[in-house]
Length: 390
Image 1: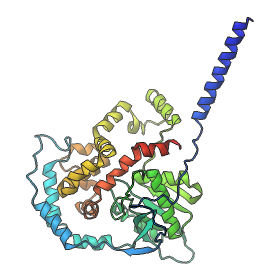
Image 2: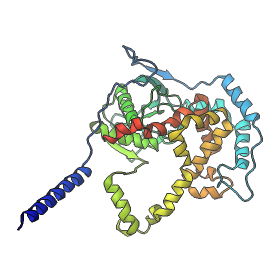
Image 3: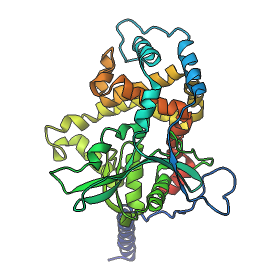
Image 4: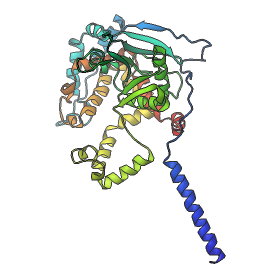
């Protein structure tokens, strides 16, 4: 073989080996990022001594706040009527909004709902510079019943309110099992009664550090965790960063996005039957239809990931505007076919009372803007630089 041929073979072999190594590295689990368990998110400089006490908390809204809300609801400008033959396809139907606002003004009794929301013990404690609000329900059981600690995490546009119905089922004894749960339900930072961060960069993965520290403060070095929406992302991050702390994980937001997942997505678009059975095929395919739906319904996502404060100005001044914005997400997020219904399908799963409970938590805490910032922090350059190392 000539010298040139040998050089070609050697160069080709070197190139193949190099490419093989890079592909191998690409598919290896990334290293865990470095994190600071004491990273400070409060205003100003970190104090030399942190208050680690746990203080009882109760929702107690002043008459001034309620009178202001009533004034705003009663002095709305006339709503723009929907187009003929349109239900929810252009956004929340203002005829339906009139019905809900009327119910809010005349039938919804906040003082009764305040008592309802205060039925579970609530607390505030400062974690990494932020006052974190949480429900903490300790079950009263017989001596032979096992108690497991469980952290429940909500998302957007929900709140701790979404767990009120399931808490009694988790904390009460049942003849069919020998265990119950000690339930901890925090408000995410910037949501409801939890203090918002004063500094940028508090992404969902960094919130995971806060909630691990919260559970440690309460007295649990190991616990189960379940998350909804952003709470599911945070729960997954807790399990990733602190695997020895997690006894079990459940998430409603399972979205694999690594290289293997992308390759499978491409192959499945050509050969769906390789990955799903016929009964489940419609949930994922055809991909073009699903991606088209994302484009139609995820405009809010882009707004909140880029300009949350601008969006929050208008919505934070208008309770009816906030209602339309949030309730539209409850409707379409439950079932996209509800866009074709004048009632938005809201009463199929919810009641106006439960929906308004959730809205009131956002309104009385003035937390809509700060809650929407989670989208921006998740996708900001600062957050991505931390996430990419994963």
